[in-house]
Length: 390
Length: 170
Image 1: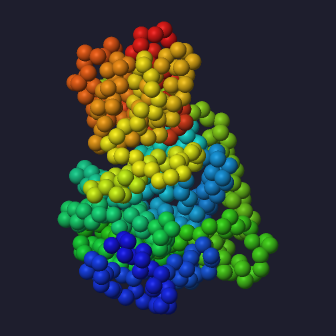
Image 2 (image 1 turned 180 degrees about the horizontal axis):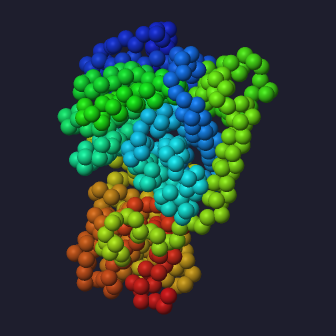
Image 3 (image 1 turned 30 degrees about the horizontal axis):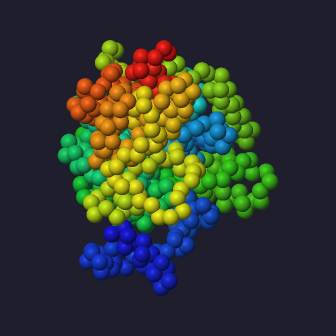
């Protein structure tokens, strides 16, 4: 099957049939396969523009949220953005090793959820996991120290970028196995229901994870038992380098939930307001015993360090274009339009966050590595677990 | 790889990502490594060191160090872990009478445990010391460099184990 798809790819391009994906019967296997468009015809998110009709950020005409909420969103998202920019920079300098997946561009997916949920609700995600604990109140120092593999990190330097944990704020990890967090998210929700806490679990995944078999088992049981869980796919259009069109027959990913009669909806996740409202609706369902929801956060990742630069050297048109792309810029625009804060006050917030991120770097650099004796700690609860020693 | 492709049965081919940058000599002409046949990389008489994959690099270094101290180590690369070439290993142990097994995986349910079992089963009377194995620590591999160092096999641990099985002074 896979082999035949590869062979078919150039033909589709040569025929110029890029807008269609005709089903063809594979001669060798007799199985229907979808002809793949040639590589050069795929929309390329890295080249800029908006080839795939990606969601854009907008500033609302009608205000639904208070000044406090907006300022809070701005602070949280700026902290995520500045922290991740710094992490990317440090990774380039090899101060941070191993894997490192940044959240730049997707900040609203977390900020809008945190504002819609309650203290005590649980969060679980995959390996793009620095932003969640930041928004939930974990100290940037502890997250940066974890990236530096230091003993003062939130996972004591044992986890690194992909394995952030902070039980105190309800962040249940950072998980490296694609899709592995989906059944775990359902399991956490089961625990909340079993213990009658009234709390729920929000479970994030990428558009690649949706193709894992574990999702379907977890969805079925979550619906069957009406678990208080909100499944979220952050659909940025690409599973690593592979577009959704190439990995999934269904490209409106939220409708996958229909097979389980699970309520679902697409969300423009470039708008933090939309994220908040969708999560609030899902949370109300979860808390009233109606069970899970599957939300498709339509977002996109962009690279480019200039994204959060002050726009002093840009033309007005460029700034306008940029505002329509960026979730933080949209919130900034709303704050300024409604005079929730002045340019100067926002600049002061930016400065404070910059200092906070810088402090986290110094904290991480000055922290010690974990002692070798730590190897056997925190693996099992049982203090005298009989490890095998030779 | 060629043997795996040409084999009529399904074959799992494992390689170490960390070795992608390594350079070395390869034969000019076509060559095929027989599946299920171990390679005696270096002949020796005092102790047998056996492993496979990336860990072999540690064995070469350790054998060099041991040679400096007058200990002659026979180094075996299993190459294939299913099937395992028990005969080559057991013939070696019958000659050297001592065995240190090195494996990057965890100790429980491991290749090293299997090798030690078969050697005691088939060459018990030839052993002059209990078999020692060196594995990853019995915990999930941590991220911090200090903990990785404490967890993975290394040359120092191999040298120490050889001293133990040869009853040499450390």
